[in-house]
Length: 407
Ligand code: FCB
Image (cartoon, rainbow, N blue to C red):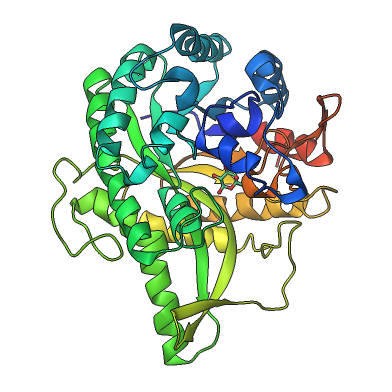
């Protein structure tokens, strides 16, 4: 087991690299779905500036960095793998090792190549096999450098936002299709898990699950029931399936998925906020908005819920890695306090004996925040998107102090 606690930041390829014009998100952006009409375009130009980004991460005194592979660069056409793109990420991994930074590698973070999207994307019956082939082509090459793997980032977010609420590509609104996609992710994860373990038996594999603090809008039994169901469907079902290998609502009725049981080596936890859920005759449930303090992204500022989220996933009796946590706050008004509180909650959980491997803050720098474009600023470093200059926010100093053991 890793001895040193991992302190780091997290990013994702499409949000920072720039030039990713061959995936489903790029196409979605061109259709005008992004707030402010923007697109990922050159984003933070990290495809070229990644060394500088690692410098920034090191200036924070972090010893870990989470980033993702861009599948559409590695497999730009079906079955054609690009050696230069593969080398690019290998070089990043080697450089991180030289700098003694632990890489946390995400294989899939929200984007798929256009060739796959045009065939039906996640819903294509062969999606798990396509993902498996992608993994086969990269995992053995990267395995010498990587101990912590994340197969899929936030399968529950992709399913909910892309297939239930329709605000992520492909813009579908269907409960049954949302469930089907979750099942596809489970199948894909099971295959990726095997490939990783074959290549590197000592490595630790998970997904990064988005856990929302889901509270009933009132004490009424119906609101409690509705909130409980959303909690099951959204927060718990996927991880449970990775432990017992069985489907459950909303992605099945208890059938066994071969190779899925015991594919959760640790829990990758992404935490941001809380929502209130109330019962509705039509649709069963709805979010209830309360007058609470909100971040720029309109999410409740609720660092207190972090401790509960940790407690919730501790039920699986696995080590926990905080793979994301952060706040959209352009003026850095609330971030320092948010940081202090989440770190405080995490320490409390650790004192109670919950094994936590590390904390990775979202994000190193402002970046392309999906459908919100550049409007939401999650960075410890502020990004000037004209000059691409990166400047530390006051929170960067605070995080540095935390990582240095001074807080
Ligand atoms: C998470 C995503 C990440 C980023 C943050 C703000 O849901 O994993 O890419 O968008 O939210």
